Length: 204
Image (cartoon, rainbow, N blue to C red):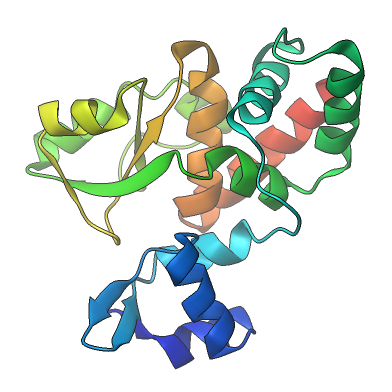
C-alpha cells in the first residue's frame, strides 16, 4: 500500500512541500497519480535513513569514499583532499554516508521468479559477516552497468521492490551491499549494516 504525500510527510516529520521537493530531485521515487504523488513504504524509510545536508558528492568523491571504506586507501584524490575526506567519513553519521555514496547509483527492482531472487541473494558477500540469514529480506545486485545487469536478470523496476540494483565496481561490492541493506533493508538488515559501516569508519 502506497502512502500519500501528507502521509509520507507525517512519517518523516517534515512538510508536504519538502517531500514533493525530494520527489522532484529524485531523492525519493514517487508514482505520479494525476497531480498527486504516491510513495512506497520502502522508499519513505530510505529517505529518512539517508537524509543529509550539504552538496551531493561528485563521482570522484563517491569513488574515493568507497575505496577508503573498502580498502582504507584511495588514489582518486590529492593528498589534502584525501585527508579531508577521511575526516569527513569518520565524522559523518552512517545515514549521511549512505545517502551521499548511493546517490544516483541504486534502483529498486522485483524479480520475475523466486528462483531469480534467490540466485541474487546467494551471491551477496557479506550475509554471513553481518549475521543475517540467507532467506527473505532484501537482495542486492552490484554491477558496473546496473541497468543492463537488471535486464539480463529479468528484474523489473518497482519502487517497492525487494531487490536493490546498485551501480558499482567489484572492488566495492561489499561496501555497496551493506549501504543498500542499510538504506532499503528491514529493521534487522538496517541495524546489522549500521554496525558494519560504523566499524569500517573506525578502521579508516
